[in-house]
Length: 107
Image 1 (cartoon, rainbow, N blue to C red):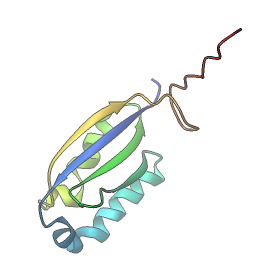
Image 2: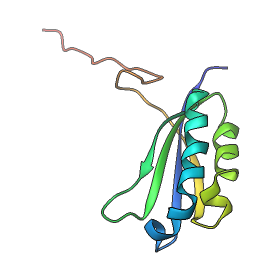
Image 3: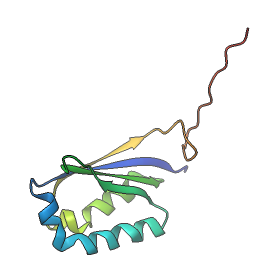
């Protein structure tokens, strides 16, 4: 089975920046372990306003992403109020999984 890209979207509490502080180190440890396994590619909070987060994964199944979320200290401690996983068909860029080249017009 070929790996695919998946996006994990987090919905967070209104006082996210304050509430995450006590769980941030264990959340980041969880994230970096996933990155070391080659699953988590990029992750971070949305800014201005900080009202969510987006995490990019590369995995053979969405189960990897779902398990990450279910075990994330932010989720377990109510900092994240909801989450969803979406497959992302990447077609352009160095790390795209389904690269599509530019068609040149012939004259």
